[in-house]
Length: 492
Image (cartoon, rainbow, N blue to C red; front, top):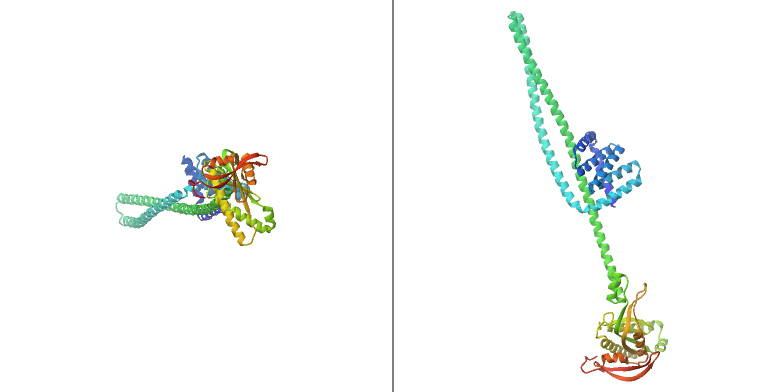
């Protein structure tokens, strides 16, 4: 679109320049004279471009190509980007006429790039062009007034010349009469000859005056012709300025429209980035999302102390046989959505994942804190209450329901993101395995915690010691059932 606009604007300038082809030869001579006297690089670049355009209008393409090439070289030397842009445009136009299409296209693209670069100065250029137009109009008005005065003076001279011619004719009559009188009277010949000579000198003076007046008239005619040429040149310059203003306005509005489209695209990209961030935040902790966006990878972190909670549905296989696959998925989804909403109330707990009918979360990550054992037990108590309410609903509907077991253990672990596809935040370590054993050794509707966790929460919750219980691959572990909060703790 920009290339078409450039060609269209340049074609308009070319088509209107044809109207002034009568004065082309004189214009070329004027530009060449200015080129010889001009020493500044930027004005000299503009003169070379004008000469190239004049030769192009005469269809002298080789000369046009030479001057355009010189203008480009001088513009590059002076870092005159606007001159370089129009030099490339002129070279593109001449090469196009010569049949060098590939070269013309490359030069036109270079011109477009330069015009894009200097486009931010369009407003200043338009103001300068308007000032130049006003100055040109004032100069033209002054020249027209001077021309009118010259015409008036020429008319006066013409009337004087006519009067002098009449006087000469009268003098000729007087001389003839004098000669006749001399012959008739046979007067003093010497005196008559003297008079004749005197009259002859007067006639010579009159002839000289007539010659001078004719010379003055020729000079005035030449001045009038020169004025006409200047007027045509001024008209050509004004027309060129107007076309350039129009061309720059077209570029300005095209740029404005392009910026508007770019802003719309940027807004769409911003919305997509927000959606992407929301998806990442739904999968990963916000701290890891920031690290992934900044570095492209997330560092695995070691935590000296965290609290892990596992939940599991008792008799899941038997209950799943009583439900259709769709009903089974809907019921699991309902329960796990409820767990997610409960965890949102506790800022120290991070959901890790679901494994079949098991739900895994951990407290104290990714930001370490001291409240995670207490908040994990509070969340477990809320989950028990949620499942009890669901049990009553399902019983009223005469439908099977899930019964939940919960296990909790505190200890060190490693957390982070591994791999390069399908990112997932996960935790590893013996603490995770022990928490799983706490869940498997728990009972329906109970929160089973390890001795480690009990040491951290014994001042906040009343717990029932179950003794040392054998756990798979772990040996005997002290286990406790959480019964209720202590009196000095907030009610669950």
